[in-house]
Image (cartoon, rainbow, N blue to C red; front, side, top):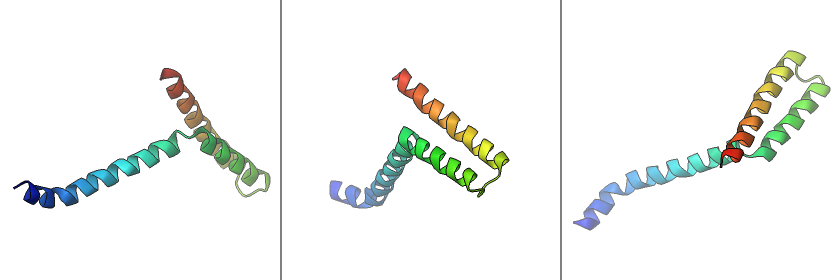
Length: 78
């Protein structure tokens, strides 16, 4: 009986495992301070070579700085 349960639940367990892995990667990417700093440097470079407008630069910079601040606050709370 347990073998049949395992066979029937295998696809569901696989989906659950995959969901957990995707969540881990997303959390790691969202909370990686180095990645945010790298994106800020790329943004600065794009602005300096006139690839993006000042308005677009300011908007994206604000978003990245807010994410960086959220990461730092979350680390302080731990």
